[in-house]
Image 1 (tube, helix red, strand yellow):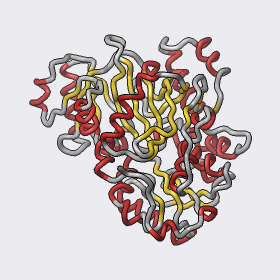
Image 2 (cartoon, rainbow, N blue to C red; image 1 turned 30 degrees about the horizontal axis):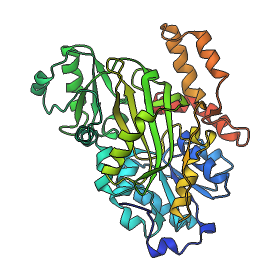
Image 3 (cartoon, one colour; image 1 turned 30 degrees about the vertical axis):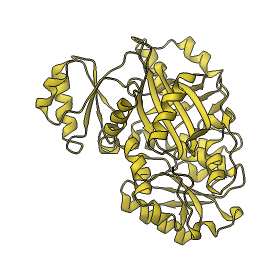
Image 4 (cartoon, rainbow, N blue to C red; image 1 turned 180 degrees about the horizontal axis):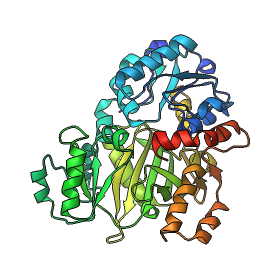
Length: 403
């Protein structure tokens, strides 16, 4: 069983009051980590390859801007640069992107000589980084998933006994996302499926195209189980309903999320994580199939997730709890209280405008939800500059990420 990372003598030599957090990626997710730690007086260094909003936060002590963080070598170089410039020995590293998780897992033993790495090794990470492995293991554990096929060629499409709607998605997200800026494509017939497969196969590595049955319903049918998993147990946990997402069909990111009570997700999530010997923060995404009522596993994210700051508002401060565990402190069990709502206005508002214009959403219903929000992803009276900075960066972000 994987327990704490960063257990080398060099990492332990740093006193707890000298340790801090190294956040890889400075968007709203990274900002949430910085605020979580900063509120407890923990110093934070943000490493990013974009013009990000976290650098404006009063809770960020150091920033490092590099050209690239997508490759394994570039991440290792960036961490070496940050440690050489600011010290940081014994600091806890927080990845916010899937490719960074994989790079940390592959180099965990070496990096743990200088940092605390709260990421399990590759034997565990491969089951969440590669969706082919995710779905195969889920089937072994009798966890429901959508009907799924792994075609290696156009000829294999003939074996798919469904006409649509279907989803074409990558086995490894970053091999697809950075080229298309899409999480998945939809195909409503055989011709669309063949065309989408051909396009996807030209982007990702051989054998990485996944075809899935599209479960009826939109973002309001999506749920997630979030946890800090320690020693085979969900020490801190939160269950949510993803009420709105951006884009509305195949959301790259949540835009409006609410904590709920849904015990049905506990057992399959814990079984999956125990099976792979998981350690750390993780989000398991499910979608309820209205045809049979089953909650079907869609994805597993081995890192903080976009709306993790909802946890703090609901009584579970995930990044800080992970920091406490990494420094050897006891972490008490905690469960997020239901009925707490989170929003990211810069993506939720434009997406809502599109949905209202197409009749998917009523203006009155949307406005009503705005008055029930408990916390916003970026805007904070205690730390206002990142919110203003994000407004100024909206044209840049629209081009860079397709917001």
